[in-house]
Image (tube, rainbow, N blue to C red; front, side, top):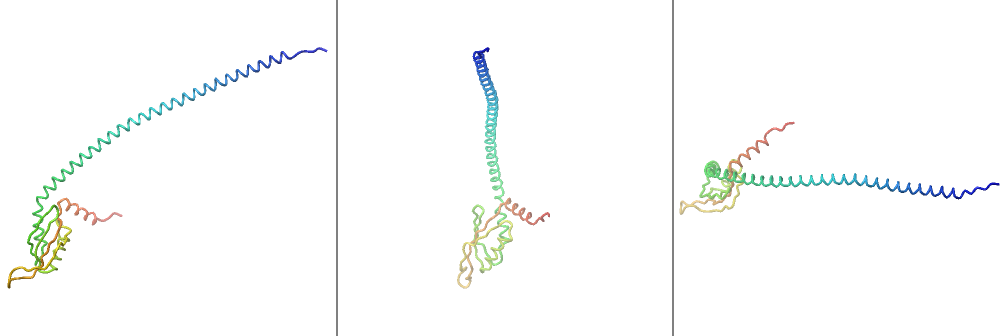
Length: 204
């Protein structure tokens, strides 16, 4: 009977398998490292691109902020110019207010009312005078409130009984003080345009 010793062959096979296994491990590690490097490079490139985009956006936002500041400054300058222009226009229109006021008082003061004085402060006028009765004062207030395109919001400040004249010529009257607003031409135009818009028929 022939006996063959297979131990050296088995040992050699084991060594070759170990070597192949180690090679496989090394190759796997190298492949994994390569994959990590490639993925890391791709992610790094994306991060770099995103950072560049963010920097571009920040730079553009800074430019927009500067433009917004310039626009705000221009708007303030425009508003200041408009306010000055409006002040000049108001001064020009206010020069004619005494004419409008005298004309309106002639039209709106009813019979039985005598104006003793009037004083204008800004856009309010204080009227003082005598009336034959309370009804005359009420009529004056209605006229100033409803019939005048230049006068508005009359307020009765004071009314009291008084006597005018002496002796037989003495008469009992009512001493009154009325505060009324006077419109500027632009206020009158705005009120007229608002009424026209209310009266205009609505489209279906």
